[in-house]
Length: 367
Image (cartoon, rainbow, N blue to C red):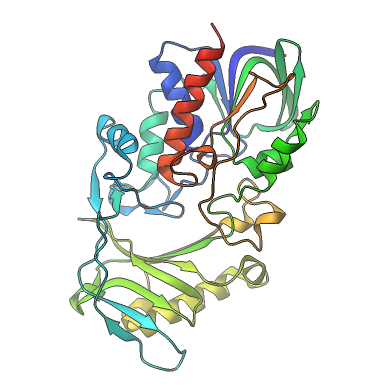
């Protein structure tokens, strides 16, 4: 058994930012446990961040943030020295109403305030937060399966093949979505039923979604006076945007309109073929032969989606209660994933807000 003051369960944005805040406050007795083999959770980019330049990385998870609405996140991005840029919107958008009719050109939307992106994708934020953290406190491939409240401590069992490790901790920061925590972690004794029900009823952002990214050498659609934005009633993609990096590779991405249950029965290469055909219908034959293309189906990701997420429409809802008010879990466990954010549940900014609130709460409760 290993003893540590604070365990952070989940190594996505909220978990890493919580560790970053603890280090800033001079608290070094913690560990971050992540079930995946990479850091970032629902924030991930492709191609591989370890093999590609910042100008050749494209978001498969969240893409945008809005500094005017989300100043806390924007301050962090500036403090970390990350470069941001506005989503490309110049040009006409396309609307595809029928599979055999020509797409219609329409005046493009200009969003105010503009949607902003990061050079290197959102994973640049993950990399910048992880870089200063002590590597021995960051444990990948550690899946927390059980939590036992034992008086003044909590014992965590984490599967780390080929063994199970037990950690004895004073406090827990739960940086995985509420529904995922409620359905994949055994709490002994059980959490209060109203709290558990609220967590189970909280939709996990991104869980029903899938994204397709096609990478090209040049943004040829711009020469046609197109912004790269499109809407389609034909699919397989329903909403499409320009994903190009300034000074780097060009790209388009789209959200699948097909429900998760339908996607599950279609081979990935078949989905790619239909996506390429759709891009060719919209943007011309050049779009049919991307240099590379990728699909990320979050509904098929066991560290993101549960069975309840498969047929649900993901939406930003109200944050559930983040901790138990009764013993034996009172003061021991606080939820800090984005879904627990009061202002921005489900957004990137929500992970920052919820983590900051959770760390402050933990430090007020313990000496």
